[in-house]
Image (cartoon, rainbow, N blue to C red; front, side, top):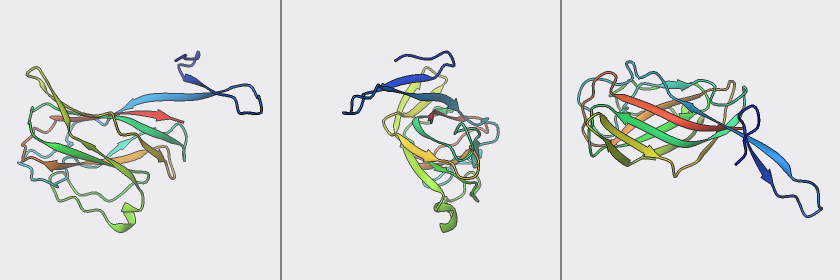
Length: 177
């Protein structure tokens, strides 16, 4: 696929039946992720507990009220805890979140701003340095509310791992409209 001078991936859409010329559509992909510092609690986790505290994906959209798609979701586990699955919840407005290692409980008002979740179950051992959990088969479209940010929280769905304070590093590939 061709990229223009600004680094935007340009896709040519087939012309409509009227014979009009093709129209280029720009798609720009960015990698986003919060700082891992202090995202997790260092006590043992139980299923359905919040793995991380709430974090912000600043500039997930190009402009306030903008939109895009989350096309890849990674979660690096530096403690190499095998046999765990995770779910990442995304919101288009700031929300009141539970602390890391507390039960995942979101109010009805905040759930109204949830644009969806992505379940992460596939993992690959990366030598002795950790495990990379990935989901790149789910595409989650979103539209931001009052700003250009998405807000997220990772929930542990299975396993009983224990982590160091900086062992979990989430990252996301987002196509911006």
